[in-house]
Amino acid sequence: MAKKAIAKTTPQNEQMPAFMQGQDTGTETLGQYVVPPRIKVVQKQSGEQFEEYPAGTVLLMPQKVILAGPGEPFHFVPLFFFPEWCVWNPLQISSLPMIRERTLDPTHEMVERCRDPERWEMPCPEDAKYMLRYVEHLNFVIMPVGNPEVEDTMVNLSFSKSNHKSGTTLAGLIKMRRAPICGCQFEARTVQRSNASGSWWGIEVGQPSTESEVTPFVEDQQRFELYQELHGELKEHHAQTVLRVDYTDDTIEPQDDEPTEY
Image (cartoon, rainbow, N blue to C red; front, side, top):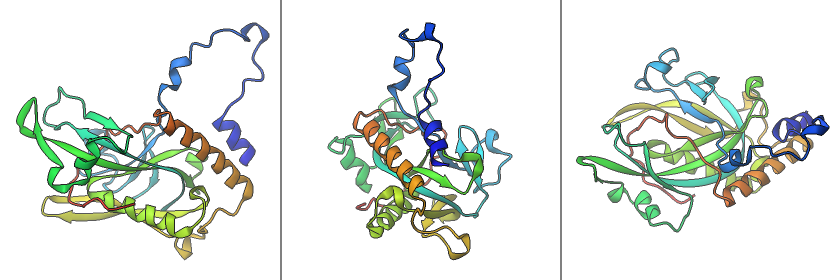
């Protein structure tokens, strides 16, 4: 199983015809960014392209593969964690890109604004009646467990804004295991949340439930070794600042959770 997974992740061209060997591949720029598929939670206001899915459904984007229905559990192994800090343009100005600025550098001046609730917003230079949003994203590249449709597919699970605390919860659970991050298994499900600004679906994370029969730790050594290899690749991509997340289909939810240490 693990051998097959490695082959899918790093395919080899051993059958390449001799006349192709040594030629320019024309793929040099394809590795400029590594953008894993990502998890999206469908909201009531997600738009027409998601109207066939009930609110609270967990989708793998951009393929729109259903990982779990509203409130249903799904399980995963976290392979790698990295935060990213972004400035979001106001959605009301459609001529602007959704992300105005982004950084992976923890020393960047944006980071302080993203972590200070009193400085999360500032007037947009193009139209001061709308606000920019400074957002900290807690990103976990995960491997879903027990779902044949996404077997051996690395997926990004991102926590921000009103779901930020769930990200810090997951980070805390990983720390408590005192084990390699890629050797741990967790359970997640969508839950309904609300505040004065409205209601939405978020993701809640925790230990695997007894009835799931998913163990807290990866028990197959070959599988663990595969996850270690992928962790190393992701760590290298992050160091090269080519690991990216596509947030463009995110719905802006209420941002009322104060960032905490993780």
